[in-house]
Image (cartoon, rainbow over all chains, first blue to last red; front, side, top):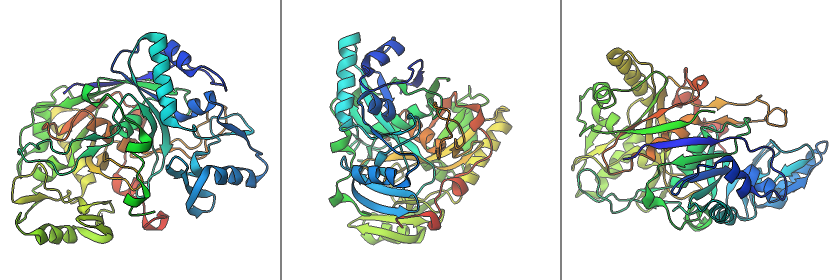
Length: 233
Length: 233
């Protein structure tokens, strides 16, 4: 078993609509190497992709309207808190609409297609640096049964999102029944540990992941649980 | 921002009821240092604490009876899958009853009080090695809206389970509304990335965590969401 390193990517300033995020990342992480996993927070991806809408900070209905527009279903509501399903299939607070770390008067939406965003960053870094990395776009979600937020993957490229260990023998030599590990969520959470929320670190490199995890995968198909499988919706 | 290292702890063989787990860990991780976070999987803690019950592999009702005994509430059931609330307040598959990596004829239960187990390991390592580490006991849980399993913390000691970043200014200088990060879950998931399920690696050291996270904390009080806060139970 190899050790993992999690390295913050520092020095990326404020990201603006139309910025070439791959180029900013390449400049800030010049030592990116084949097999690295680069975790990038949703906020900077949304900003670079101009997924921003104006919001009136003096009108409490303004945010509610934006959240409604981003939702395909409202699952629960309690006071200000709306748990909504987005068109991507994510179930999260406020349908991913976020005002923190955004200029006053604007709200950030989730990327239109975060798996596509990840593929574009991967392709961009390959073109710029001749390097083959995996990309995870992360966001901060709550959990139904547990307090506190954790970062999870909302998009990925170049890595299998869920690694299926079914059929691997356990240490008693029997087949493990079901152990499908969502490694992209674990990697997103690990990256968050070196980012903090207010430090301006918007990306981290995870170095040393099992090479067998690298390959095709996306969050939309592999991680989002279809309604038919869902016991709680 | 500091980099993190995640180091597998290798060489711990099969753990048996009554084994001194702190001593086994001290021997396998002789370079443990102050400020390290040691993540230990539930399975070896349960084994050392003799949280094992006999199970008849030929009687399909045998496991169901054990799961019922470990549950305070059954939330959902579909075929073989039971989503139950344990007396600790965890909501998980089969109330944490697990047959993988256990000798035939036995099932492992969750530790009686995983936060206490963590405190004991922390005290044991301090006594044996004169080292102040944080301990996280991890287990593999599913999620309501997302496929794939991730490791989360079921007990901890010496670390604040949820780090409250409320009131920290975002990079635009405004107060962040709510950013309570469940760092123990992110650390448990990060550790899983170097463990795998079938390799016999039952612990990992996370080195380099923010020293301000170290201190008093437990999972039972800080992470388990009380029913009154719960929108989905």
